[in-house]
Image 1 (cartoon, rainbow, N blue to C red):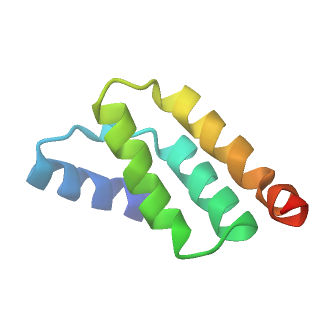
Image 2 (cartoon, rainbow, N blue to C red; image 1 turned 180 degrees about the horizontal axis):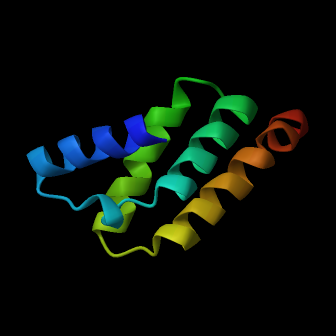
Length: 81
């Protein structure tokens, strides 16, 4: 994932964020779960929402777990409505 590391370092430098502050694994897991279980365009928007929540003090791992759980159960929720 050298290219990802290089990209995050460059973007982080532009935004004043250290790459080690980015929960890359959790974000990628969330994006995958949303893209595959809800809808593909929802993945980047959900990642943005997660970033807002974390910026407001939410724990990144806890936010990721909540989002993934919701995404993984989304089909069941839609079937019940």
